[in-house]
Length: 150
Image 1 (cartoon, helix red, strand yellow):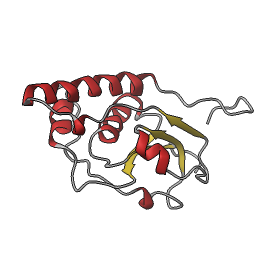
Image 2: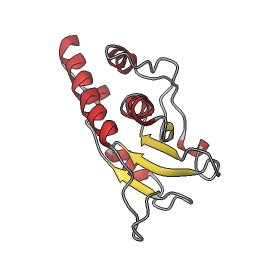
Image 3: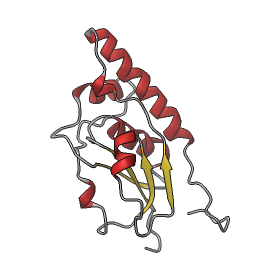
């Protein structure tokens, strides 16, 4: 692992909105320091079209990303930092993850569950996008008990 960037895995339930946006943002803001991926505990068949649209509005292209299953990473990829962006995934994600240095829970509203007019739903996607963007811009791994960074 010498010389390789540490892996950050962002988890959500469907891996179609929040975690996909977070992956795009973290890659944009901190991709020089981390290898970034996202996964879902119950992945949907595709990234939500409105997630792709609102990220495109700020020139971050997530159109080539695809939902992936958590099982494709657990025990198969050396994940060092785990970011969990939804309540349901936090409840169903394994508490023990071999090799993980930090586990951060930062829940965001699920824009896919928004209701209302097209304009109202789009406004929710934009609000959540902006919240995730600020969080990913500012995210840093938490120090462990020894004071070392991971």
